[in-house]
Length: 266
Ligand code: DGL
Image 1 (tube, rainbow, N blue to C red):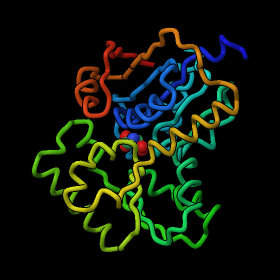
Image 2: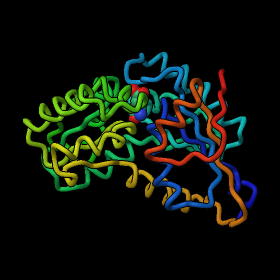
Image 3: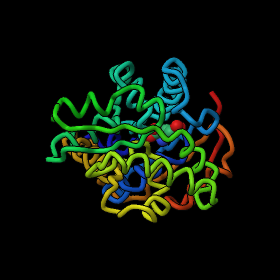
Image 4: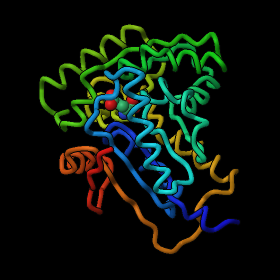
């Protein structure tokens, strides 16, 4: 086993705090890993950006992970997985794990007949979930609904504000009218809203992809001989492109960030 390669960090990126839902699950399975997390808070919300913009941001972030000598990168963002993953997947020496493709495979292999997907406008417009699920189950009925306000609610930490609760409830009610058997939280920010969503619908209705995604990343890293079995101290570094204190504060619900959150601009 090439120890130095195994010690290299895993890079995670998202437009903000959403990717922490994935990081948390990955750490449960792989507590010894070194981690570099980047939240592109200057450009959030990604769900309202064009493909060209997302390509630009992602290139900078992936170059940064290259400089940091990451052994693998987790695209903990449904929006970039849906829109630009195919364009950049083979341009780096490290493997990139995209959340949408990984989750669609798991969902497509279930016996479910009708599922709902809550996601950002860019993810819904891309049709990526439909396309990926159809590879495994072309008959599954998929109801996509974009929730343009939800990412801002999470980043601003205002999910308990009555106006925000009303927005979330209305989006949920529209989805419930389609009578889905399960609803996938197809944006990594959305699990932060489960305390609100579960006031109006049973918890079992929702699929938070984070744990499933973490298992597939873990399995692939094991297969590639890339996990870090070294029990000596590991590190976690957090970077954002703007407002580090706000990031740290909104992150609290999902992840206790002990180190300083550094600002980096490309
Ligand atoms: N959390 C990301 C996703 O899973 C991006 C959300 C956004 O910035 O719009 O799609």
